[in-house]
Image (cartoon, rainbow, N blue to C red; front, side):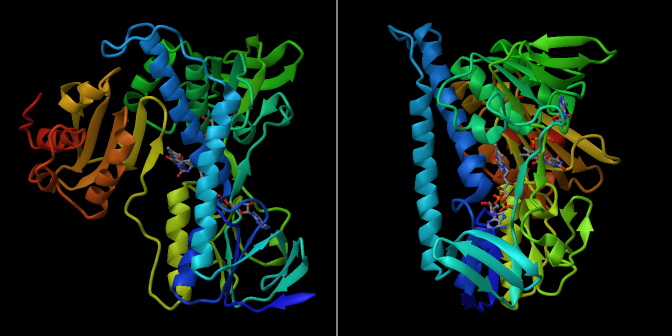
Length: 460
Ligand code: FAD
Ligand code: FAD
């Protein structure tokens, strides 16, 4: 039996774990990374990247289909387009494969030792990995836990060939004619929107009384309108109960039942940290509810055991996982670091897209300034104004300090960094107003929203 004694052992090769391992390698730390599946984790293999690939393919199809009806900027097509799901999935797999290969070579370049197999701890510093070459025991000085998360199943709707999670939805070789999505969170809305564009009849069931309940209503309204114009049917204040031959039974508020016929039922009711099956219970680390408890350095209650990413709590986002991974590597290498971002951006890749950074509207002693995309030249050239998109800045009343920015509209995801820079660096409205923004770009709408907050927007 082989034994290894590295400085650092990373469990999980998602955006938390692989980034931690690369940074450890760059800092000269002898590092082993254990991954049971493919390098890249949920994000790269069955999350962010495949879903955005599908969304992009659906957008292209939708655009070409519109042109076939003579609706696009005066461009028309003689015949309607065809989307072959198997080809769409093959293209998506190509994108994933490229990035997976990239992660592998980055890890090699950083001299990280990669072990393919399932890691299991017998105590906090002893990990057994069953690899194709036999069992390897690793006794590291430091452990970074980055096991990520898994989709949550509903009690009466176990995953099978009809009831599927986002993982299966991203690899369907044929388009479901009738797709019912349970849960109008960001994953359900992103995938539901893509399937609707590709031609499925989509119904979205949501227990709350509105879609994307974590956002305010004004921000969500353009998304709801756009989905409805695509023929997506919403069942709000409705709970999915069970599946039978006839379809999915749902209970509406007030107790009324309905059956929704479905070829596939996509359940997207949240994700849960992966805390079972790898010996967490042997490690004596404290928990914080269902997550592993960590301090502001991502240290667990067990000495030199660190935890990052989806395993340690919300927001369960790839860029948060990576930022924590990079930080922990630097702490192990002796740098003074802590995880205290002012704001972590979140993007919902529906059409139109939603970006949120920092605080939302309604807080005490704040001002909201809004600029509509319909008054932005670039938005009009890109069709980004459709359905009432806008950029909204929340600033502190007395100091004008920017505390939050939200946007809804096509392509606004690319503005998320601009918004985050402003908040993270403590900019005031005057700072943004005083910067020359290129014309014509969507970023001018951010400039104008700042001017609006100061009472002198030019284009509204
Ligand atoms: P994961 O990416 O879950 O990686 C954990 C890895 O650990 C896995 O590869 C797993 O195989 C491995 N592992 C676990 N236990 C063991 C063990 N015992 N031994 C060996 N290996 C093990 N986030 C965004 O920021 N933007 C998005 O647009 C976005 N879109 C998403 C879309 C979908 C459909 C889904 C499902 C998620 C999306 N996310 C998005 C969330 C994002 O994927 C996660 O926040 C991110 O992947 C978390 O990274 P992580 O490193 O903590 O864990
Ligand atoms: P969720 O977003 O949790 O949505 C699941 C939905 O399903 C809910 O609306 C719920 O009401 C509904 N539902 C549950 N059971 C049923 C049922 N039986 N029938 C019908 N509907 C049901 N985390 C935060 O803590 N705060 C945030 O503000 C936040 N914002 C985010 C923004 C973005 C763009 C992203 C990518 C993530 C965000 N997260 C946030 C993290 C997010 O909550 C987690 O990643 C979550 O696990 C996302 O998965 P989901 O879309 O499947 O679930």
